[in-house]
Image 1 (tube, rainbow, N blue to C red):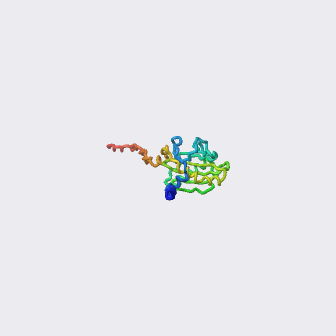
Image 2 (image 1 turned 60 degrees about the vertical axis):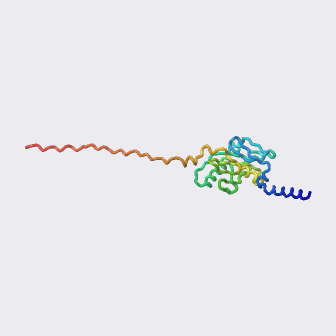
Image 3 (image 1 turned 180 degrees about the vertical axis):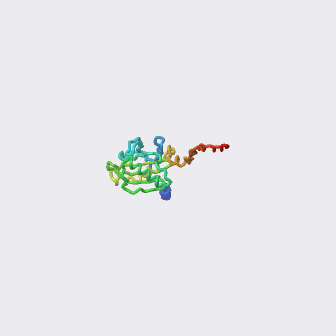
Length: 210
């Protein structure tokens, strides 16, 4: 009896170790397809709906147990054609901030394809902002919190959701690809008109005979 119990405990501990940490932490989380536009990893008891966000129409995802915990997700087209990815990210997050009325309180933190910040909305609420580039898409995810402490307390959950957003199609108008694929224009020159010179020299009069 004792050996069987020890074996059971050993198997349970082994299973716990082998389960990925992210899966253990996320528990009942699962991917949800939203409006056939993107897939996002959410806890099973969250809902989604259209919302008029600080930065315009977006998809809201909400914790049904804490209805003030709403995260807005937008998918837009890349707004910058720089070869420097960090420059593209900076331009896009500044565009989100301008539309949403966010003053950034923290320096931008850059990843390989994303940028994050904590900021403050015009109404005094604190913001978590995450922007990522993906195949011509700009994925903007932002939440509003009463205090900076509230925002940081939700940071892990917010980032897990933000990083999981996967658009289902490339950007519809990837202006950067369009700019790079434009053929080099061939200059057209108009020929300079050459003036026609008329012969105005009078013929030489022949000498008359004496």
